[in-house]
Image (cartoon, rainbow, N blue to C red; front, side, top):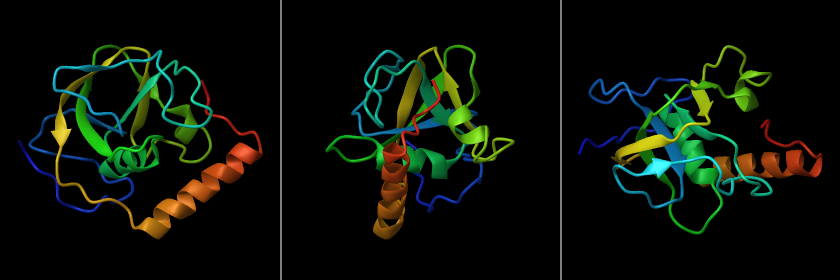
Amino acid sequence: MTSQTKTPVPFEPWTDGGEGRYLHGTKADLAAGGLVEPGRASNYGARATAAFVYMTATLDAATWGAELAIGDGRGRIYVVEPTGPFEDDPNLTDTKFPGNPTRSYRTRAPLRVIRELIGWKGHPPEKIQAMKDALARLAEQGVEAIE
């Protein structure tokens, strides 16, 4: 099992032995070969049923997913592969990061878990709290994820 020990850098593509796969950050405890599927409660916001599942090609975006997901467990990042077509994630690419430099995507098809990424470094606690505060302000304003 390959280990990733570097600190996430915004917009830096993730590479790990040329696997050509993607990353998914969450607090769910998943097994290799399992599926991350739409139709479950979202890890974010009001926890509505998710119409999509999300993946990224950057360690930074996956780290945010793991750190911001709802739940008491530890953040986890999985190497995943899509099982169907996918598109740019409009929650990030429509206005915040045009052109998709975060390399963030969504799909209605399941993601197959290849393995857990071990040894990644998270963001500093003050940076995580600042992001949570910003997300809370958006929620107070009624800003919801684009489904």
